Image (cartoon, rainbow over all chains, first blue to last red; front, side):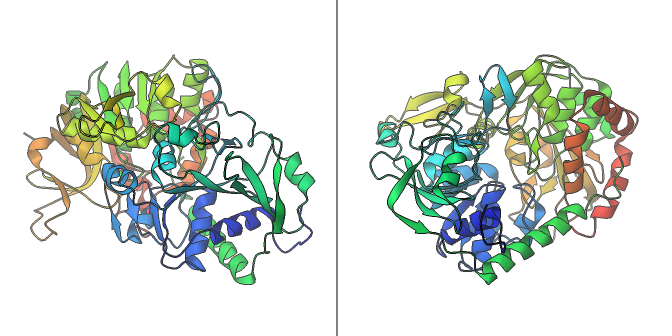
Length: 265
Length: 285
């Protein structure tokens, strides 16, 4: 998909997402792709970033990526660990999170996310895990970043269920519901960087990753893609960024595979 | 007043058919041994309450013990889906399952309200979220001071709560540390609470005064079950068995494979088998 064989689209996605985080951010981290991006940021340009996982760990600095949001590594390396009600009441609802970083199973062009069901809620075709912390992360964090790999099944015109609210029908829909936070301000995929249009709030491509064409973005997206007039090219991953990400993934793989060999089956 | 009992007896004395029951522990300290004992005793028509149903409720649902689940994330954390729960929700197998779905914030607030003796929890939540339209227990109230519209959910008051904890002292006070999740709230919200522990120590005299301790008079029964939260973990004792979570995905994907696994690993085993399951995980904790 890219002409440069030195990195994969997924690596580009994670690294581009990591660059969006700042050293002074307080980031509520979703599991999976967001977790990798947040920890690459911490291990490169944002060493003092505060990473928070919904299990209650505040200021965590894991050496390997957690498989779950409550792995022991998160607590052992955190500044403090609080109870789950405190996490959601004081820290999230209290307005202390600058960035909520979410992944998505289904996403629409206004940043609404579905991780609950495919099909009808009461008679689902596929029952997905559901929202966990996401419904309130989406409305109580000051801003939301979203990261996911592009597919036509994932990026759809209409999501089956509003697990977490983005910009709704677009425009000022958040404000009309009494939500005073910014909502989704950034979408990073394996092909491009997207930002919402200031008025319509529809996600618009602002930067293509190296070697990616407009057509590739359109072919892997279920809605009619809009491109910014001045389209940037995302800088390729640096050697340090790539090495940091690959080392982190290698440590993670070794740690997760190494724990279960002798168990009773 | 708390009693130290073998797990078999603690479960038999405190759980009944038709109860609403919470087996809590947020990824950490999941009370697997207690859940397996409940499976062996074959309870029916339970309302299972848990923020993250995890493997234990996948197993209980797959064994046909649940008539309803109350939850906020029905996935295998970091792995994907819970396939027995899915089969029940999508196909009514092995029996139909009523669901009451919340967000984490909703459940955490509801447990806290239960512990506080309140009828409901009030918080800023579910704005624009689809759950409010499909769960009749998600309502709203208007703040009498500011006019802000807030979410309201009924408090959670289980008949019985089971948790796993690191240790008890000889009097039966219980200590929980690490990711403390929702355990304290779940115990205080319940009519009865049963705790499995890794070990019993003489006293807690030398510990930090602010550690999470549940006084013995908040607990009905304590059972000593080393390894009792495997494949979850006990901070300071053994690490999470991530490989077992990955393997579960395959076991639970097939109805017959699942039943064979349950027979060999739960029905024909006892609480005493947990200690050996965590031997290889101890150094890393």
